[in-house]
Length: 68
Image (cartoon, rainbow, N blue to C red):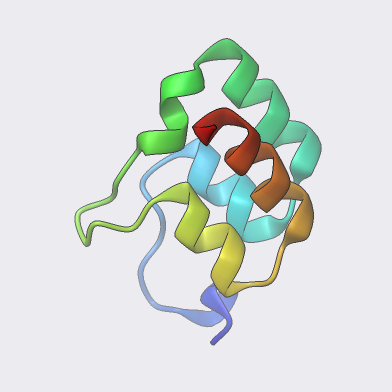
């Protein structure tokens, strides 16, 4: 499943960065606000879901680092 072709869009910048594999943006956003790791969209999807479903290892690592 490639979210880039899905009809809905994530709710925020962190979700966009995770979906796109932009690890630098993810790290920057998490530095500004570590609570973003817990964001959920209206479907209950978190940034971790966006990063993992597209196999983006950089954002996954950044997110997991904030969860632990």
